[in-house]
Image (cartoon, rainbow, N blue to C red; front, side, top):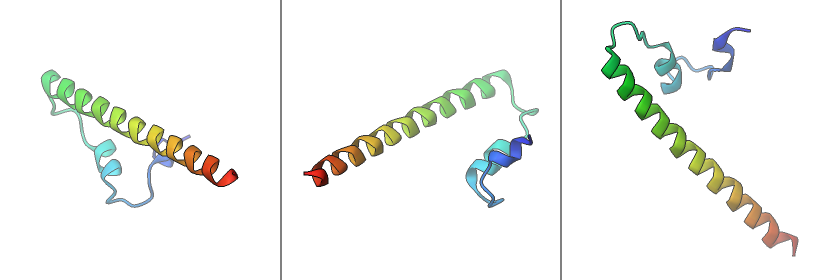
Length: 65
């Protein structure tokens, strides 16, 4: 399986550009900073996802009555 299969199809998508960025020129400190920022973004996405799941469950409960 090719790693590119999981990427959005639009070549200008920010995620595509991020994943394809060459990491070779980055220093260890720059890589650490990038990892930290990406972990923060993952946490933000997970929080948004949890909110959406909870919100949907609340709405479904409301309309079941």
